[in-house]
Length: 83
Figure 1 (tube, rainbow, N blue to C red):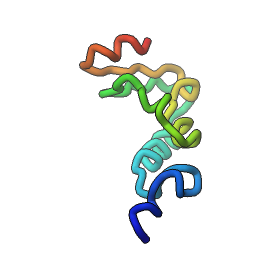
Figure 2 (cartoon, helix red, strand yellow):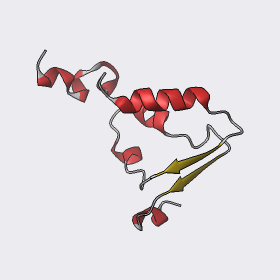
Figure 3 (cartoon, helix red, strand yellow):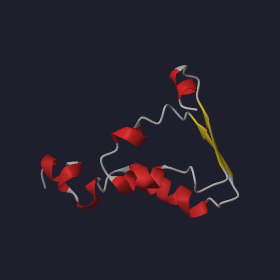
């Protein structure tokens, strides 16, 4: 196996098996319920929503609509634009 074999565009589903994001958010999705309020500490500006190339990766990270409310907290100024 060479480095190019692990390039996301060469893999089934468009993401690497080494992508910890898929495992992490898979676990989060398994435990949240529709009535939950989720607080995302270090939320950032969610640039991943527009940058993600794999629709599955994007859909598993997006908690809005899966829980009652998502509250994003971050110390950065630019995050205030993502309201």
